[in-house]
Length: 353
Image (tube, rainbow, N blue to C red):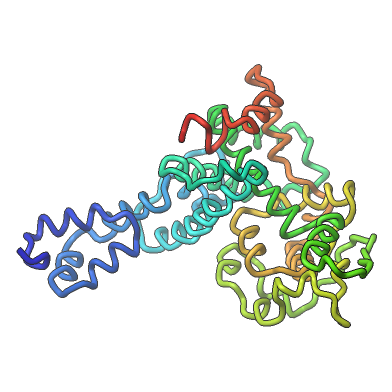
């Protein structure tokens, strides 16, 4: 029997078995019969089922995209299915899936012989951790929480309420992906002077050039040309052509009359540490976009400046809040972090293989 002659019920079952949005849409465009079956069915339900398989858990993604400052971050929010909601879920879902590709290279950075593809359940837990870390940043890493309020009792309590929603094992998953995010920041987006020196020597082993590092890390006034490009994660995912046409990652370590590779460094150990702590307030979507589209330091500086004065000298607070909650539970934060390093805890564990 030809596939297009299958009963509508069987065709509908095939639609419901699709594991990605593109599979659903491609199947619907196969022939007029399939298009009619899809059009006559509950299209949103089918699309949401596919989105759950591709980007799930959607419940956590929904908490992220429906959050706004008028409601507590820790309260569970429900939203009716709609095309508008599905588009928002696709945006954050696509960003989360990019971390599935980044994670193995960073998790097994040194013991690369153990590097492997993630299983379906591991990818699910990793996306869940990304959505939850992203929600925390959206709720508490913004202009409403300047540096002067980070230790206020009310602020700490509000941050802790969100983390109380999740078990210690789930918090370890978030901390696991947060360390991967940190690695991306400190080695790709905001590399230290030492990292620049090492990568320059690796690329140009025969060069005797001495790199000139800038010891002043104050962010420069933002060029007006960058201002309109960075206001939300939604715009970030659109990859402005202005950046892509004016720089290439290949130029980062090349010395030219107009470019000094040493200027790409973000300082030595101590200054660099505080730069990374600031940058950890960026959400996972912003970080992965900057990794792909802003190879030069000036681009990253312009973006950071566009966020406002609250961002500078105001380190991330998730690590501090995690320690607070773990102590509340009578557990040891260092044991949790050691468990992540040993592979006993986190989004990917030895037992999950």
